[in-house]
Image 1 (spheres, rainbow, N blue to C red):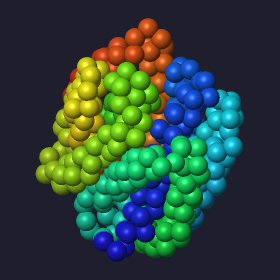
Image 2: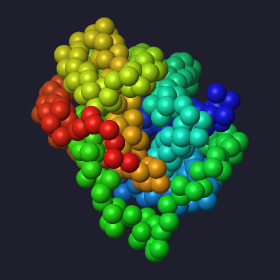
Image 3: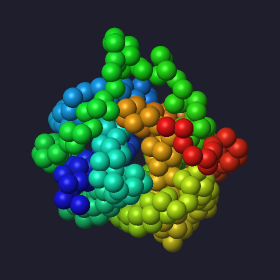
Image 4: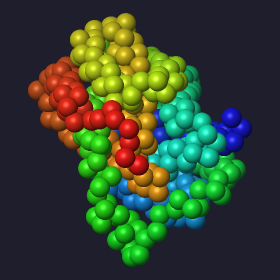
Length: 394
């Protein structure tokens, strides 16, 4: 456990920061007169940036002598840039800072997942086990962020808390420097002949994307993220203005999600060692649809809790199923790239989902959740038909 501790600690600090920005920036934009549609566009811009950059960061880390140095760069620069949210008093300045900040911070996820998967190769532990620890650290960071933010909002306005989240995010740089990389993995480093192959190896060899139904996981990830990003991007405002709960109570209820994510991730990570991850991912998708239905009919805090609890359980199942599947069927020297495409497909969902949610919210706030649930449901038959459960080719 001690060998993976620096990476997990860095990820917890990163998640405390980035999850704290979510509701704080929603409240900030709403209070400076930004419409719901433009608030949802902010998530779309971040999603567009991640869609392009996540696989690039993953591909660069596959050829870099040290994944740790790339990881340190993403979190340090991204953390510093996030501090400028405090000084942004127009929607366009928030947009610009959000794009620059996301440009760097989105690299952390694919690189850290590749590091975890590679650690399993050397240590002899299962890939799903290593990835479950990483996903659990995401959930712990999210839980701490929600509880901390809810308590602080009782005494402070949201504006100074933006700076606090930035400091916490930037501090993740310290444990990253303590990560000990496996030197044995150097033999698996990808070789690239030119600049295009370095950052877009998929253009020369798209086989890993086509084989074993891998592409279906990316489509499913896109549809799920579109649903959750579209709904959660407006959830804080929905719960405060439509359900009628206070800002502090709204934030603390959101902590139910990571509270359930932690045991869910561990449970489904263990289950992925016995059951093919394809079926775990499908279960996670089905529960994700139920999450949106609960939120759509919410009229009190009990239904909000049910929605967030289902979201937490579904995330553990889906993310462990998908990441285990991708790691299982990816060439070792292209894991960072393939996991980057997972971040990219989810980020693309963060573009489309908020756009759809923003448009629908003009006509009906509650209808947002039901339309997005229908979108997400399209992924279930796709995964059932095209993913495989045979022995990996690689």
